[in-house]
Image 1 (cartoon, one colour):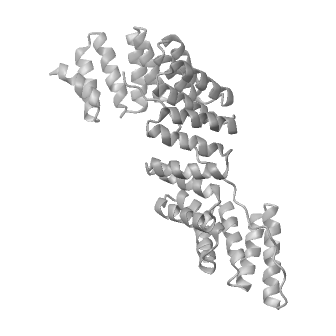
Image 2 (image 1 turned 120 degrees about the vertical axis):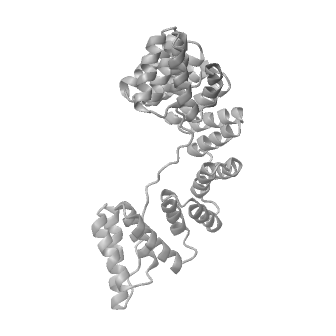
Image 3 (image 1 turned 90 degrees about the vertical axis):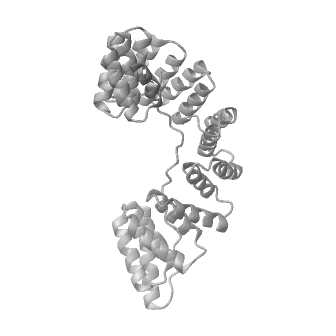
Length: 349
């Protein structure tokens, strides 16, 4: 019986941005001196998280000295803190115009482009950072994330390899390299990398989740149960993890325990259609066909396009001799493109 299960494959870290906190030497000419003073004031205000006041000082510095590269860069960081990405991007463009070798500006611009879904532009900027600063592991990591999202798994692995070479305890890079290997069906390699990620950072619950899902791919359901349980020790209120743990119990044939986990998921999120579908599947295995249909009804009321729930409800209806109802459900699922429903529909003609 087909089931949906949540899997978190990739977790890209979010880095806090930082200003170039070096002050500049005050010059002798009045305009230049005032610009440098304003810049230094801006750095001090930024350090104290007074972003609006820092913005005002950087504005003043740029007004007095229009080619003040560092002021443009640091003003862009203030704009990022103030959730003004378009202004930040304009300042980074100006910074790069003034200094084409400004690797930090390319890096911040790449992150902005990535957030704005300008994936090609972001990848180009990360590549430029790598060209200018070839030992910067984070640029390799983030470019690897982009390549993963573009389904270039071999390219992603190459970038994660480099990030790990530069930073041997880079937990996120191990996690994401494992996920790329998993996509290439190198399950043993993925499991090895997930374990390395957990050695580097044992608090990454999503890595336990990913490790468990990979073990399920290999049919190691008991191992998956252990790892999902480890994830829940870290993140106790995650309804999707309870759903995943229930799915592992289901795969292992322990339908009563699976029901218990799906109940936990639904206690945390009663609108979680996947858990309703999966609990219904467990009820079906326990021959509670009416209870299964009730849960499929609830799942479909939440997501009227849930093809698998229609297929599964049809199967349960057939067990209750409701052939017409079963065929109607399979017809709906088939119209949504379900291959499984198309197979069942052959018995309706």
